[in-house]
Image 1 (cartoon, rainbow over the protein chains, first blue to last red):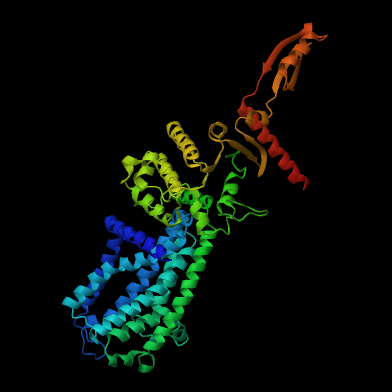
Image 2 (image 1 turned 90 degrees about the horizontal axis):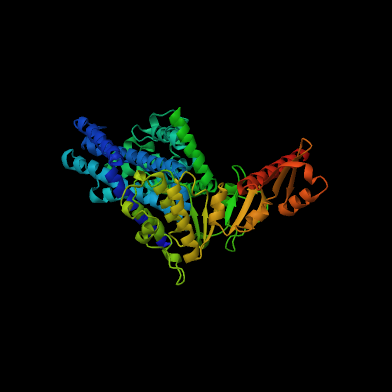
Length: 282
Length: 268
């Protein structure tokens, strides 16, 4: 099994290096980080909810949650929708343990890929915009822990989505909609209490709500609990719900990939190629 | 071994079933002692599949892709069959040494096909499957590919199963040729015996009293001698003895097999 991790790491590292050469992937991340920084910059004089801390500190949990929600679902979703059509998944499937290596490499690659963006975002936010953790280093470590747990859930959901979207060209619509919907109702930017009553229990069953809650608990001062549901922090519930989601979504991702691999063949890839060629002619 | 047949004969379906990519509608399949659908990773390591890529791993270089794909086989090597093959030796073998560090997306169609073959054999497979490997290759590249396959079979004792709809290619490459038509095997022979299996009957045409006669026979010389020595021999004219090409016989065989299958379907 350890060989799978070693092969997957080799693959992820090579893809990571290639994505820097290609500049397209990294541009996307850097622009995202710069937009977030600009957002923090323009709001730097705002007071929020009577908390005596920098605006960048207040917004940081929400921004980190949003980056995770977008990057960790969209990254593997587009990659798999594309690579099951272009023959990558099939090529990997034909090699011993290839599918496990491929899946693991996707997880490594997307976590690796998020690192430069987080650096570009967090270093200036802390250095120039006064963003800080109300609980010092412990807060950052807790936040990193929640990010990793959230990454397992969101990457698995992204992989499952990538397997289920009809094809790469429709991945943007079919895949983006559930992710954006989940972000809107999960109280990342706007407390869930402001939602319609019937939507609140749904929101609180979603992993993104609990990831956001965990990030706020990690980085915001204790008194910020006043804007949370019930006016209190629920870190244990956050870890428990995320753990349940992690198990469920990893199982879902494995099932979805097995389904895709079972319906993948040389002739299916050839059909996809012809479809794309025809779409290009039209 | 070559699977030969017209488009729609079932070549790709057959090879995909053998590769474990497709579930057979009936019957049982055995490749290297296992059912391909249920076989595990150790089986995968012994089987090579040459798929037709189009744009996967476009940013990788041939050397990196071969080294990475090869590394997946490294735990499955044996003393008799070390795995994987060395990437650079393999690039030499398929004539891509000068493209080793190019981006795969910059390769031409023929170069890409040769890279596909290299990936297919990087794990030193005991059985190699190729589906229409020479479709779209120019004659030069095609000849190079044939030499590569011969080398594999001779030096590595690799069993190669490939599909083609080119009769000449099947004859040149294979020890054994299986002809498929309408989803059925209509001929199964060594390349040498293929001509006999195709039942090449010589056609004898002649005219007698203004009527044209045609007779198909395996013993044309004796038939003509008997004809001319017979009672009407002196009135025979326009004699023509024609041996159909292998291609004609192949097409005739496929046509009759297709007709037969259509008739069976209608009857059913």
